[in-house]
Length: 150
Image 1 (cartoon, one colour):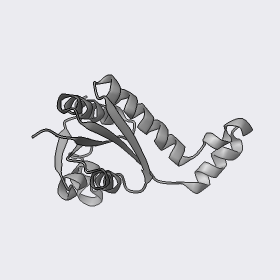
Image 2: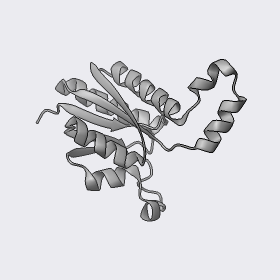
Image 3: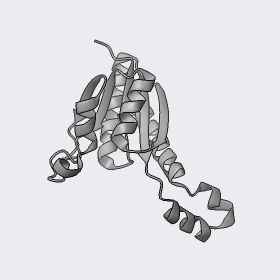
Image 4: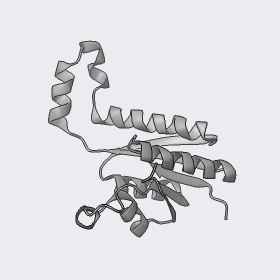
């Protein structure tokens, strides 16, 4: 089965970048599009404080959404370097797993790629984690890339 739309989440970490590279390699092999997804949680008080302290000409750049957009843009660059020819980004506010799942549903994603980070930590039982939640609720195939040792 050839995939047509590969969805991959990134938070900008090294392990997430490994998942982006793997998603891009798979997409390149299948001629698929890659959708790089980044989620953020707004922190209005911290963002406002940082904006006040920044030089006036840079204040427009300071937002949680802007930082997430930069992470998604970096993920797009990594995907292109790894061989994907069609790469789009998606940035949204909310729980990262929910945002990835919604992106897969909205774009007709037929494969979600996530890194394994957090799957072996004890907190996964209390808080859950992105790969665990995605694997249990995905509307399509899921590839969990072993990123813990990278």
